[in-house]
Length: 178
Ligand code: IMP
Ligand code: MG
Image (cartoon, rainbow, N blue to C red; front, side, top):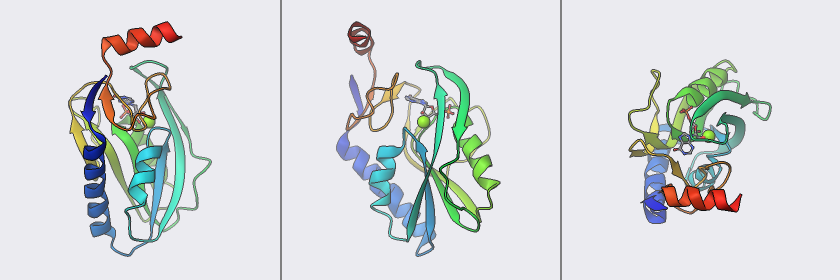
């Protein structure tokens, strides 16, 4: 595993995002929407640095079918709180093609939120497939498959405290363990 973003660097990037979000919303209440499962760790770290009254909701999105390629997007929005008139901030782990965030954004917009913005920890370069502007970005990264700090490969590695790039040796070791 090659470390791409260390624990210290992650915390610096998240503090910078929190400062930007605090600056933009001031004391206005914010409903943070955690896009499960990948953004669970980011959301836990980020919201503890937000200073306005925060409500927390979640949606469940999955598009990867046990591989590094994209499958059809499944979206479960049954756990959302009432968003009518709120400022909603969708938080996801990574912006890759943009389909996930775009779909979540469209859904949330239809639920009557006054404003809908988005934040991602990682923005992967050269992969965007549709027009979508992310409001808050932690780190821009090259087009490599990354894991850790919430991000998985076949359901594992989410617990790594850093963001790393899988190397061929990691994948071979993984296959031996299965
Ligand atoms: P998008 O819909 O293509 O933007 O993909 C976004 C989702 O795909 C993210 O929420 C992640 O769950 C997953 N994903 C995209 N790239 C990676 C990666 O490099 N590692 C792990 N998961 C990824
Ligand atoms: Mg995800």
